[in-house]
Length: 78
Image 1 (spheres, rainbow, N blue to C red):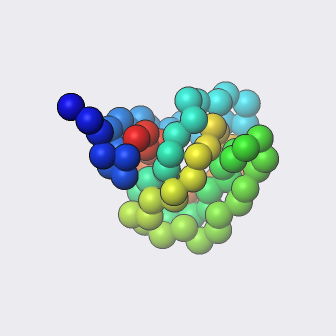
Image 2: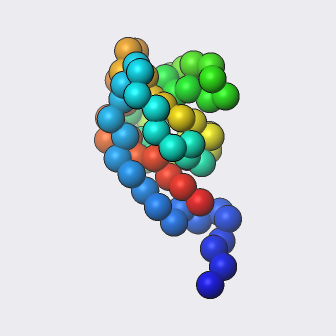
């Protein structure tokens, strides 16, 4: 059975950390409004005022705890 590349086939809760990476994801679901500081291609990228229910279509390896105020973050994989 082939996978649809635009549909997440795995989802894992994210615990923000300034030092612990996770497997590179293809998107981040934001459950609670706030700021997300994600590591994308080795650099910190800040997304401000991200609304509840937003999916950030980014390939990230970490969400920093410092300055991240958004909650209920989920890494999506496809």
